[in-house]
Length: 226
Image (cartoon, rainbow, N blue to C red):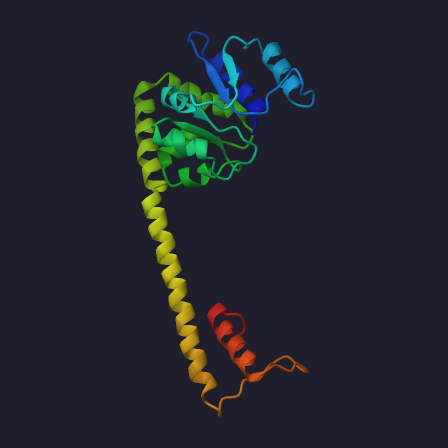
């Protein structure tokens, strides 16, 4: 999920804001430097070598997650690849500016429709310096921060409205059902007319008349060699 990138961004943010008191919190399973010598040990080493062990806390999943989301001023999605993380949706609903990386998170594709969010919350792929710079700009400019936070909350409710989502699924389902119903009507009409014969452009292929009509209708529907 990019914990090492999170640590790297945190280190750069602290360097850019030495006069600020900033605490970073990561919540999630998997971090175990005492037993995991493949990843966790080296992330712990990264934290210590960066000298930010007093500024960063790593917790196991807990019920306090919701409280932390409400208290956070900024949320970072540093995943290497996460199409649309629920934690990011939670952060946006809480009105928390949610930063992400281009080509690594689905939020970037949504942010492109909002100039303010695209410019302030999307960093180039793996560019920790750019993400740290964007975070620093929000930390030091309350006016811009408030605008971004307000727009995040608004767009979060607009983009991830479950009622609208469910209604859209019903709309798509009804549209497909109408297409399928019409296909059945067309098939029954054609199968009842003995003078209609369906010919194949493929040679030496024998198919039943019913199968031929089904294929004929599917070709027109999909626009594949109708």
